[in-house]
Image 1 (cartoon, one colour):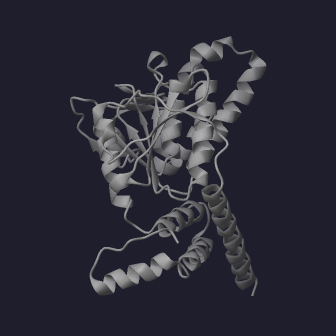
Image 2 (spheres, helix red, strand yellow; image 1 turned 90 degrees about the horizontal axis):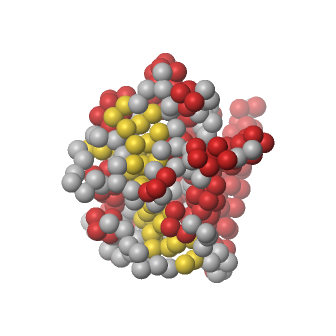
Amino acid sequence: MAVLVGRRSLLQAFRVQVADRDSACRLAATSSCTRHYLFSRTVFPASRLSGQGVGIRHYSSDSKDDLRVRYLDGEDDGIVVVGINRPKAKNAISKNLVKMMFEAVEDIKKNNKVRSVILCSLVPGIFCAGADLKERAKMHQSEVGPFVSKARALITELGNLPVPTIAAIDGAALGGGLEMALACDIRVASNTAKMGLVETKLAIIPGAGGTQRLPRVIGVSLAKELIFAARVVDGTEACRLGLVSNSVEQNKSGDAAYLQALQLAREINPQGPIAIRMAKLAINQGIEVDLSTGLAIEEACYAQVIPTKDRLEGLAAFKEKRRPHFKGE
């Protein structure tokens, strides 16, 4: 009886959570966003314009080019590309970048038309070098803790996005850069990319989730080995360890991982969006609990897809031997 009551409570909690999310999505769709954007003629490298249409958004700030967010359209409608662009600082994580990424994540979270997100770099040979140590050196000791907490909160929010997130690692992803990638659902890397949690070289530890997410991805023993030794691995070795799901040979334009991530996003795009969100929720929540509770979570998530129009569309398309057209309803 206690187990039954517990499962009923869990089911109710999930219904409330999904209802709240749906309400937020409807609100976002029917109201105008109050955040201001600056639109620029600056464009991504040609290969990063692979979508049917591109809208480049520069967030209004003193360093508006640090982050560029594109909402693709046409056949790629629903794919969002978040590009880090701090070439002089090797994409290091600064106060401004954290602020801009928070804004981008909030916008994505409120937009129920988003199907997947690609996190990449616009700087050749680098994904993210970690914390901006030049900026860090100018901080008072009392500022360091709050900044790290905010960066940790950002990476947590990135991990909590309800849609699939893909990190395209075409260059070095070190320290906080790798921690950002670890918060994504899927990681793809070029064979020449370099990855590592190297904080112990600076007599500190990973502070934005690395000590928790890396063991969950590659296992406790291997994670300890990499963190203790501050070891850096290339894309091929990272794939062998399970740190990335796919390693591809780098191309002349230096964006092989991005192109692979875009292809993966295109595979995800046609699938039922509510089903994808519920599958992500079930996996993320279920992996943290025992099997019995995990199965109850799966049941609760499955219950959310039964009354959807998309489920009926999927059945009709199967019967009529045609491609389904899901609307996220």
